[in-house]
Image (cartoon, rainbow, N blue to C red; front, side, top):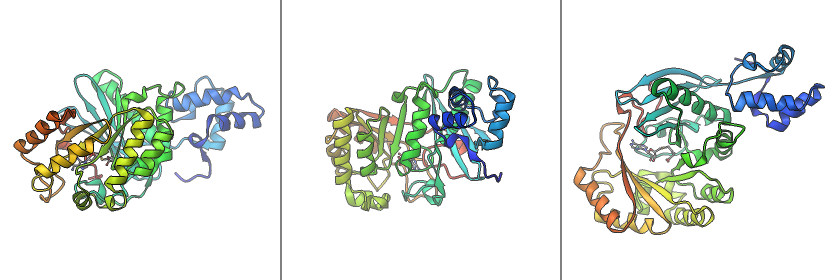
Length: 346
Ligand code: SAH
C-alpha cells in the first residue's frame, strides 16, 4: 500500500478533535473515532457505525488505518498458538497465545528483529529492522484476545513483552501501546497483568521508575557473574551488572514492585556453586524472585539445558535463602513458539 495519507492512529485524541474542529465539525466526533480505533480496535472506517457516511468519507480522504494482518497461524499440541504478523510495510513479527488452566497470556513483539546479541536466542540472529509502532503492538494484543475468545472461550488475561525485540530499546512506543491497552478509553486491562521483560538496560529501567509505571518488570539475568554474562549476552559489556543492580534498586525504591529474574541453567555454562552464590547475592540487592526457564534449543548444541539435578540444586539453594523460585516449562516448542525460538521461519 503506498499512500501519502497519514496513519490516523498516529494522532492523539486532541489531534483528532482538532481535525474535526478544523473541518467545521464537533470536537466530540474525535472522541467517537478514538473509541472506534482504540477501544473497539476497528481497521476500517466503514465499521464506525455511529459516524455518518459523509464523515467516514472525509476520514477516508485524509487518513489510512495502517494495521497488522495475521498471516499464518500455527497451533501447538499444547494449545499454544503462534501468529505470524504481517505489518503494513510487509515486514513480519511473531506473537504467541499461551493458554493455561487459569489464564491466557499473549506474548507480543516490540521490534522487528532485535538489536541485542544474546547467543542463545534465535531472534538475535535477525537484524533489527525497525521498532514497532504503538498500534502494531496494540493490534497483536487485540488479535490474540480474539483468538483466545474463539479457541478458549475466554478473553485474554495477561500480556508479556517476551516476543521479538528488546522493549526498552523501543521505550516510547511500548509505553504508548501499554497506555492504549490499560486506559479506560482503550482496552481497560489492568497493568498488573502486564509484564515487560528486558535484557537489562539500566538507563531505561531508571526511566520506568521515574515514569511510575504500574506494570511488572522481568529481567533476563542468566548469569550474575559479569565476565560470564558478557560471554552469553555480549551487550552486557556496556550494561554492566553493577549498573543493572543500581537501576533495579532504584526501580524498587520508586515502585515498591518486586523484580522477576529470568534464568536458564545451561550445562557447563552456569551450573556451578559459584553461579548459584552469585545469583543469590544478586537477588539480595532488591526484593525479587527467580523464574527458572527451560531452554529451547535453537541450534546444534553450544547451549544445552542443564540436567534436573543441577536445577534442583539451584531451587534448593534459592529456597534456603528465602528467594521465591518458580520453574517455567516451555510451551509451543513443536511450532517454534517457545521463548527464544521466534525467528520468522517461513
Ligand atoms: N529482549 C527481552 C524480551 C525477549 S526474550 C528480554 O531479553 O527479556 C524473552 C525471554 O526469553 C528472555 O528471558 C530471554 O532470555 C529468553 N530466551 C531467549 N532465548 C531463549 C531460549 N533459546 N530458550 C529459553 N529462553 C530463551
